Length: 120
Figure 1: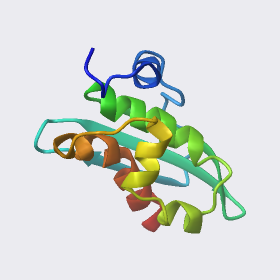
Figure 2: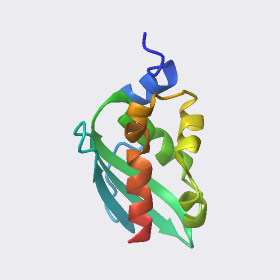
Figure 3: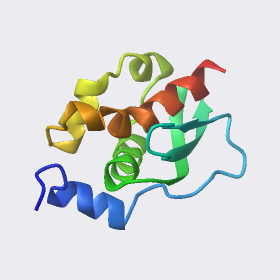
Figure 4: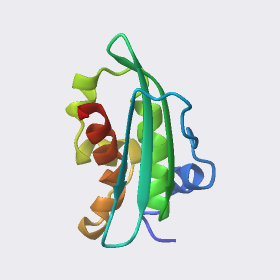
């Protein structure tokens, strides 16, 4: 099995967390990877400066969907400032997997959508 498709990634791909769009999000954004066609739409609900609920819908590879699942779980309870400081290396650490440079856009797509959502 290819190293980038480790068990954690496959589990989040097959059974993604927060795989829903929120009824009343306070923030939302949609991002696409134009190279491969992956699309992620992020919905967030903020209360008192903290992200309290997250959701996403998307289509794409295992890395894109698993990353969206993992990052939407991770940012619950975080402030916008904490989220703004997240980088690619943080996603790699959350995935517990090294990702080839050619696939970095797959794992950062949802983070880009989240940052764009909270900056609107």
